[in-house]
Each structure stands twice: as C-alpha cells, then as structure tokens.
Image (cartoon, rainbow, N blue to C red; front, side, top):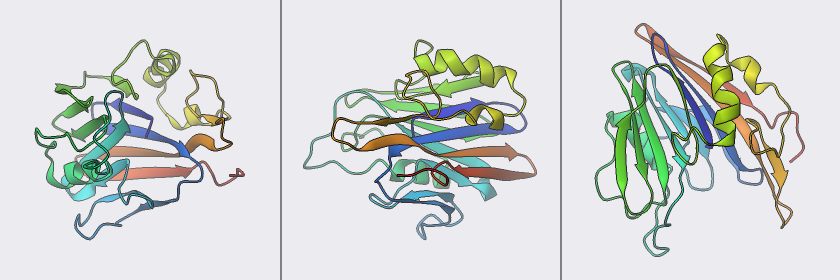
Length: 216
C-alpha cells in the first residue's frame, strides 16, 4: 500500500490506497487466514498477506506500507504481508529483529492510540501519530512528499473522504490515485481503496475496487 490516511477521534478513521502492479493477483476483503480468526483484509495472492487488516472484535486495524532503505538479504528475506495480520490479531507491534524484512512502515490503530513503526533495513523507530488527520506514505510521515502536500489539507477539511478518491488516475507525483506504465510495459496503478471506521459500538469498512472499470 502506498498511502494511508488516519483521523483520530470517535470514530477513528483510516483510509488505505493500495498501489501495485496490475498483473499481481489479489482478492478483496474477507477472513482469508484461519491462523488469524476474525481478521479481515484483502489478500495478495502472490505472497499471501495483506496491506490493511481489520479485527472488528478487538476494535483494531493495522496497515502496512513499503518503506525506503536497505533491502533484506535475498537468502533470508520473508514477505512483509504477515506483519499487518499479526499486529491486527495480537494488538502488538513486531519484535526487535526485523532483518528478514525489506523496509516498511506499519501502523497499528485502536481507540486508545495509533502507533507507527518504521524499519529502514538498519534501524527501527516507533512513534505515535499526532491527534487529528495524518498521511503516511512510503517515506513515512513526510510533509515534504508531493502527495502529502497536495492532499493532506483536503483530507483535513473534508467531512467525507470518498469524494477525494473520485479523481481519474494520473502519473503526476502528487496524485492520490495513480496509473503509469513502466519502461518494460507493466502498469503500476492504484488498485483499491479501503476506508475503516472504528467506534466503541462497532467497526465498519467500505472497500472500493478501482480496477472494476479499467483495462489491465
């Protein structure tokens, strides 16, 4: 996933925009993982994990974004896709030894707090997200990122976020919904959006498949 928007308060609201190569197979939200009972998320069919996991019974969600930094050793690397699943299931961030994972940002959110753990391949940092509305991108909480500069004020001002994902896809660095072709002919695009609202009396989510009306 490439963009996560978080608004603290009641309800706690998260919106994740997943950007990926269009030829990488996936499926929409469901309880796809017997080892994580009750956890809901879209599933990446190549590696088996998810980018945004919701645990309705625990009033908790976890989101994973790729990060920048030093890649893990090829011989020991494991998929990052289990990180959000485990965090949503247990309510805990992963332990200190993250050397098998490529760089990432992991957000773990419930009604008590929202935490951000970042791993750049060498160092791990943990912080709380500030009150109000924040955006996390591949460079973390980065106010200089073009997408953040363009869209964070809009998300802060909007009472309903759905209107902000209606723009057509663009290759502009500041676009929220993206689509561009790489030099080898593959298409990289925003594939889906999931908005989650966590309240004391329950959890709701709204999933939008952005590929439904597009050619691959």
